[in-house]
Amino acid sequence: MLTTEIFKQVHDITHDEPAVDLNAGEFERVVRSRRSVRVFTDEKIPEEVMRKCLELALLAPNSSNLQPWEFYWVRDVKIKTELARLCLGQPAATTAQELVVCVARLDTWKRNCKLMVEMLESSNIPVPEPVMVYYKKVVPLAYGQGPFYLLGPIKKLIGSLVALTRPLPRGPVSKPDMRVWAHKSTALACENLMLSLRAFGFDSCPIEGLDPRRIQILLNLPRAAEVCMVISAGKRAPNGIYGRQLRFDNSLFVFEV
Amino acid sequence: MLTTEIFKQVHDITHDEPAVDLNAGEFERVVRSRRSVRVFTDEKIPEEVMRKCLELALLAPNSSNLQPWEFYWVRDVKIKTELARLCLGQPAATTAQELVVCVARLDTWKRNCKLMVEMLESSNIPVPEPVMVYYKKVVPLAYGQGPFYLLGPIKKLIGSLVALTRPLPRGPVSKPDMRVWAHKSTALACENLMLSLRAFGFDSCPIEGLDPRRIQILLNLPRAAEVCMVISAGKRAPNGIYGRQLRFDNSLFVFEV
Image (tube, rainbow over the protein chains, first blue to last red):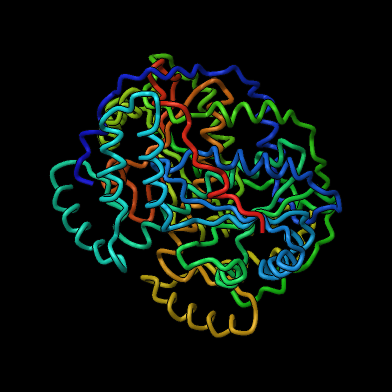
């Protein structure tokens, strides 16, 4: 948390990945035609479409590439029926062809940080030293909270003192911070999943009106695996969209400063 | 929080919005070519592209359509330079053509709930009664936490008792819950923004290594306006991407149950 100098460096990079030309209008049609669909038809989603959309979800950017997400594609009929009930019996869940429980993990960053180090060390492309330092030293310091988050207040205190003199990230220094952190990256992937479903001709609904504790128990998940949302999917029924998309004036949300 | 029966109804809907056919391959190219770019070129992003991408960000799904997000497009050179410094001087910020501070608001849901009621009441399409009940009664009850979040523990207690017998959303019942809630929807919009930039031929980097408190002060934001991330944008420089996209095996993240 205190070693912020390494962020400032530009590295010598041999990797070349030129941008590809894209059809922006086609992308805009994906975004504009995505609606939260509350009633789905009986039409199935091909397995390979679901797999592809889940794969594209995992390509979302995420915090320090620690990938704190999990996606439970519930295919067992009994579990799926119970899951729909835990989504308060909403038609968006009960009529869905597929249900995916999107989970934010507060605890997998340690495993994933080790995997990053292994991946970087076994890479045949030279890895800049600050990147190795970042995963070996900065990440454990920044994300580690000690048992029962006891280190948090100490980190917060030291951070506050250091931050008196220079810019410094202030967290994560608590369980709430870790929750925000994990849900944020998971939501980025969720948006990929929903847009992907639309691009492949299907629809979705992000469901937050649900019983997260009962879903944890249903899927045998630990407390550190928090339900971010359930994404239901299928083809929109004619009565599946409740009205035109309602957005307030953009001037309430976008500011040029 | 206790009235979950209204979720179960399918409404009589006169709105018809058929799905449009889309080019899934083209969408996949947008997702796959989006990389976190750390160094940008001097090429400017046209104003109309920035405005369009911000507009598409606001079309992301969000919790109860309460749109708890704000986007500060920092155009003033002095503020922009200072903002890049508060992003720890990262090249992703210092070389960026544009910087957008993406903010999660914990407090605007009340205003937006009122706007929803006004919008629905002035609609010339009949609104199902449960939808009006939802915004007039359920939302204030579900999201209201009282002064200093004092209602939270009471809501939590009542909720826990009711949840003994039936599925029930357990929150939001605290400031941490409200934070997760607002950041989650904001992140959905952030992903739209980054994918939109890519679709229009530009690149981005989501920055979380920043000093959120100093950014609040710089933009004159209240405490309830939390920095979700800063999104920097521009054209990728040849040394702008640090290596091939590293993802761990999908089997660590996707489970079929």
